[in-house]
Length: 290
Image (tube, rainbow, N blue to C red; front, side, top):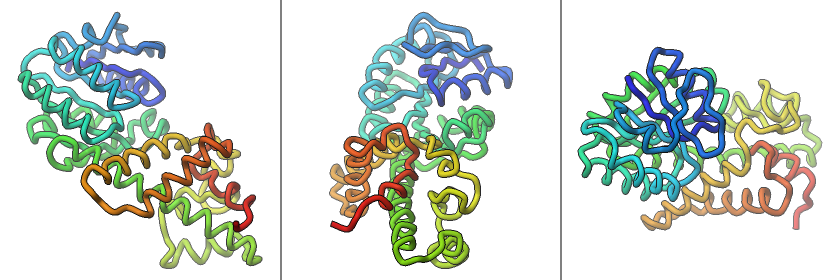
């Protein structure tokens, strides 16, 4: 396939490289990031999209996605697919999809899980919204860039799945960190706590696969001074998106809101920016009950 790729940052660049290595003809554009080897550099977003069978976007937020869509949709060929892999608000995803479909294009929103490591290894998980036809057309690309793709329903449902998943992740990480901090003050050894909880009803991904306590459980960012696998500011972004969506549909998400507030304080006031989202553990350990 001829593929245009817009957004060649930490996630987009390795995704584009994997597509090129699989034999696809990839043209890329980014305002600031360099174009990786194997990807042909375009002069602007519009030229990236011309004559492409698929255009993939990996962008920071919904406003930028809408702006890029305005530039590329008018020049895309009929029947091509616009595949947005950014994590953005549901409203923007649905608005761009409607704009694309009105222009005779296919559209899918497919945010990812798996981080930079997954992008490099081609083991991402895609949560896709859009028509069945759009999903089928890009399915071979998902096979190159990831290990799993789930069609979650119509446009915007990929974003909905992503923010619901990450709301659970944020809330669960906070609970896991709180429990370790409490265990410390109760004199319970962290390894003993892990041995119990990881095989009991407290089992969770944040405990068993991404333990926030150093030298406990499998290797995780906690064992590397909390250098980010998934940065706290990105968790904050996703939690804010979850609460924006909850407000739009009048959903009651008190735990999601509490997690948002805690990560906002951690990132913006407590030095958490640039650290992994599991660095909430030393944050809780260092605080006294107020």
